[in-house]
Figure 1: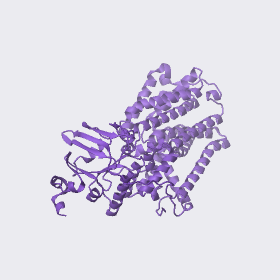
Figure 2: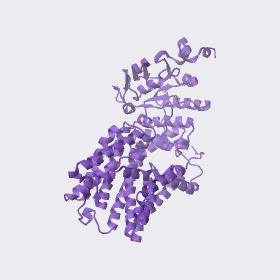
Figure 3: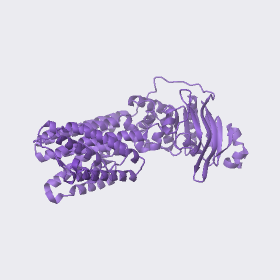
Length: 600
């Protein structure tokens, strides 16, 4: 299939990545070489500070950018690392060991305090992190025997690499630069592997990520633990570099916000955005402090705020967004005019199966919302290779039923059983269990991962079966070919039409290789030609042996697709059977179709 769209071509995308990698390598080299060439103590300090804040902000970005959890209490982990390093140094243990001890403590603390906080959303999560930061500050003030209380702690001035204390600035620059590069490498590895894709998917659409089999809480805990450990490691070095630490600065809200600001200004959720933010802001504030002295106290807050306002207004995607657009314009002419997307080497063929053995059993499902009885003793059976149509008027309880048979909503009573690949019947209780048993679903309102490309969206589903990136990418491309999305692989999902988004959502689920597919109004809002294509697509999916339950209001689709139809009204099953028999049922006509349908 030849790509005739205006989507980014693979060659142009590769050229852009190559140019970006060269530019970042040049920037990193400049950060290290510039102070060495100038050989000025103040310039050394500025570039050491750039490395420290770039590392801290990159570590924060793993949870705040990739996972979308706005932590404003990240100084907790910085303070743990700083205190661990200095306390161990004071008893004769090298801060190189204290660094890893602090990282382990910070990771454990992060997992413990974040697990309950992840139940909070939006500003409530951010407020909870601020409250926890204040708790740690007060604890540090209270346990003065360990922390020195309000007077703080000094380090013993043992000079040498073993103690991270030097008379010259160059060794400190080497350590800060090396740690920054290590943290950048960790962030890059995470973003380019399965964990990174799942974190971004969780950030964009948590319910869709859960439907794709992503353990959203688990991946967030991984992210916050890694982020905390890296933050603590840099905190240990920074404490040794400052030679002094005290609670007000170690567990400072202003410091936490400062760390987040570099990522927000540089490009939230990007690997190198925090580095660009630090490169821009640190020299501005440090030179201002050096020039104005005491008059510049608090000036850094003004600078950060002013730059943030300008970025939000003029470049909302941050400095990385601006750089990305520049590289796109520079490399646009290097791509081919049309990209050839080859079909898989091996194409499987299927014979349309007759409905076989039972694969899902729903028995007496009931759900109340207050005094409203949404579903009332709903029961049905789905067979292998069968398309089961679920119709009914608005408010009949169809989507509530879908949520219960996919694990998103607990039933008040009743059971849902799914036959697993092992041939045994299971009673799953959450979306991950349903996904493991081969049950995938779409949503009534499409839920794409807007910040990802079409290919990456489908890969999130493919990761359920293929944990390695290359395997998941290959599976995503095979699925895209089947779904007619191959020409749009490198386009952002947000650029698709509503019909394309619905196909994308089906493709993401099909990449999971489900045995049962739950379709929630995938044909609503699309034109007649797209309806016909969607019907053909659903039939081809059924021909692969996938059982389908489809909620649909488009009667053309219900009649063309369904082997069996169930009609819900006011939460009760009022009719079921073959499509033609159901639509002629007087109860159905009265409750849903209207009498005029019988005369059509």
